[in-house]
Every structure is written in C-alpha cells, then in structure tokens.
Image (cartoon, rainbow, N blue to C red; front, side, top):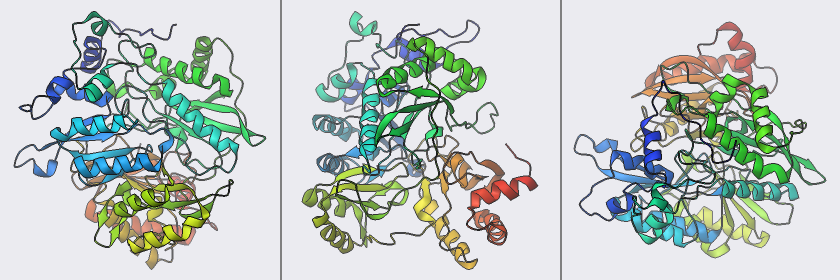
Length: 565
C-alpha cells in the first residue's frame, strides 16, 4: 500500500465530524487567516478550532470567568524535538510570553513549551515572531505526529548525541507539508480554498485525511526511561555498541488516554516489535505512521489511536504489515533494560568536560514569585552564560554545555533570585507532575496544577510523621482521563472525575514500565490524605528493604484487593 493511501470508513458507519472537515479542507487552512485579521471576530468558529490544533494552537476561555462572560484566550505549543533549545531560542520564548502571554512559560510532559493566556490581538504577532526566529508550532497538536521526545541528559557517549540527532530526523520526516501554516502565520494571507491546488491537496505522507487521531513518538536509552517510552504510539529504544547507536528496538501501540464510563477505552503499554538499523529508522517511522493512518478508526475518535489496532489485531499482524510496507524483514529485538526514570538535579559533569545543571520547576510553570524569581533568573543566565536549555519529560529544566568556570557564577545568580541549587525540593516533589487543567483547559474536570502543590505539602507531612521523609514516590495528577501527565504510569496517580473528585490509581514502578491499577473510583479532595495515610503506614511497616511504594502495592495490596479496572 502506498504512503498516500487512506482507507475509507466502513459503509455502515459515518465519518466523524473531524474527518469530514479534513476531507473538505485538506490544507488545514480553514478560515483562520480571515478570522485572525477580522477585529470584530472575538474567536474562531467551532470548525476552525479543529484546524487551529494542527497549527499548534488551542482556543480556550478562562473558566474562572464564565459566570461573567467567556473570556477567550489561546494556548500555543512549540515544536521542540527532544526538548532542546539554544539560549537565544529560549530568550525568544521568554520574550513572547512576556509580551503576548500571561508572563509565564509552561514546560510540558512532551518536552515542549506552552504559551498561556494569549489574547486574539497577540496571537498573530506571537506566531509570526516565533517563526521568523526559525522556530515553529507546526503539528504540535492535531491528528498528526506530535513533539518527538528524547533523553535530555548531556552526552555520556556518542550514543546520546546520535539518539538526539535521530529524534530530530524523525520529527522532520513526519511533518505535514501543507503550505497553509506559512501562509497564515508568516504572510498573514488566507488561502483561496477554491483554488484546485488547495482544494485537491494531498499530503505526501498523511494523505488527504491525515491521521485518525494524534500520534506520539519517543526515543530512550537504557537504563533510564525518562520519556515513559511504552506510553507512546511509536518508540525507539537505543541499542549501544562501541559507544554509539547500533540501532533501535522498535515499539508500537502505547497510549494512555481513556474516557470515564467507557470500558472500551483504556491505557495500554506498547509492544516490542523488532529491531531497525539507523538507516531503516526514518522509513520505519513513516511506515508505522501509515499503518495508523490506514487502519485507524475514523468513525469514533475515542477508538482512533494506534494502541487499539495493536490490541485488536495483535503484534504479529502488526509486524507483518510493517514488513510488507518496508519491503524487508525486521531483525528481532536486541536485549535492553530499563531500571529507573526521573531527572537529575543540581550540578553534574558531562563526558566532554562541560557541566550541566538540573533545575526543579514545580508543575513545569516558569514564573516569578516574590521570593522565587525563576523566570528572571533564567533570562539572566541565558544572556550572560549562553547554556543550552533542555526541557525534561517530567516538566523540569536542564541547563547543558555550561563552561566549568561559569558554574559558581550561575549558582550565585540563582541564589540571588531565591533558587537553591542543592536540595531544591523534597524527594516527593521531585518525582511529581501535573497537567494545567483549570482554569483554561476545556477538558479539565478537576483541579491539577493548582491543587497538586497543596496536596504534596500534606503528603510530605504524613511521610515525615512515619519516618519516610526521604522516600521517593512517583505521583502524577491530571484533571481529566486523557492522561497528559501520564498518571497511569505513576506509583500514585490521580485522575480528575469532577470538581474536587479524583480516581486514585496505585502500583506503577520506578522504571515506568508497568501500568498502575484503579484503587478507588472516587476520592473527594478533603479525603485524599486520609485515604493514603493508612496505605503509607502499611508500606512503612511491610516493605522489604528498599522496596518502593509501587512495588509494595503490586506485591501486597493487589493480592488482597481485586483490580477495579
């Protein structure tokens, strides 16, 4: 089957509204430029909201203000392969957030940066200035490949540099080719939708309908699984030989999003399919994407992820289909091992003699507070010392390629701005993560970013009481079941079910290679700590040696209590 083939939906099921929109305007232009240039238009139409996503933009409103009126604003997400930015690139992001956004930058769980609180008059200028700085937001959202993830730790060998370069290669190879993006956001021109070249446009890779849903790719290099590789549609596990990358074990079919009350939706870990060489990497990535494109469900968006194809057709079928499209047989997967996840904090030494600094960023929100001026400090560091900025998969920040002679001055600058370098936060918080949710995300059912810090303080108190103040526990929270902060991989996961109400998941592991399970379907916010306290007390009394909380849950708790999900 060719790269541009797209299978139609079964005759007895209609295409979803999104599929009809893509077929009608395959350039993804919609009427975006016309609305953008119309000062009388307060927002984009419902149809154009869907096209905006392909351009890396979400139309939102401040839900705290809904009783008064809808206050529209836009969230813009950058495409930053592997989460790596130069100092000059970071300064552009900061300046745009200051000029057009809400004075903060939000580091994401896919190693990107989001602008929040952008009003309509600032949307066009922000996008144009970002693109003129040779950065973009193309395909950061929508039914296409999203930001490609990769480990951020500075190179300990050539393998790390190769892996990051390969992640960038795959990101470029999976970009859609519509000219609407440049026309709208750089030139400010509305495409003529009646022009046959636009009306009949077919993307060379995505076809006329693009993908049934989003597509996510990640790279990892053991023993650290900081990207939660098995939660991705497509994964590449680096296999080292002689200090460089021999090739990659290819995984497929991971994904975490689900819907409350719909048992047909569920988190799933990816299957290991086979091994590809560096030369086979890009063809394999494109071929996997086309399998999703051609076999994904275009009649039900809740059933439109690659994971359901793998679950229903099986890994053997998938491998055969992939080999058929590639025209060669895959080698079997090579041995690999993941033993941990998480970020490095404080100063460290890279193999090339440079230094790096890991910085904890609570919930990924870069901002200034009266006694903690992180946003200002990072701008000063970028201007004075020029390190590389690397966004971690856990929403933290790593400054790389630092000259050893500059380390003391950077430490002093951070200290001056209220930011510690040593013991930056508690063992519990450094493994936490949340999504933004309220008040801007339209899908949010419960608080996340605004609630998690308070909850962490309460749980720190409990752990201190029982003698576990230095215990690491991976805790993640999302305001809805879509799982942007990957709660289903956590040792303790919270999933919003309604205002002040959460599902409680338990039992993930340190390497994030095991899904947790639903422990309680509804826990109200005031009850959360009391629900966890007896479990943490039992963990302290019953753990075996250095056993982690998630492993104790798997070994003890699940033998006592049948799974709820």
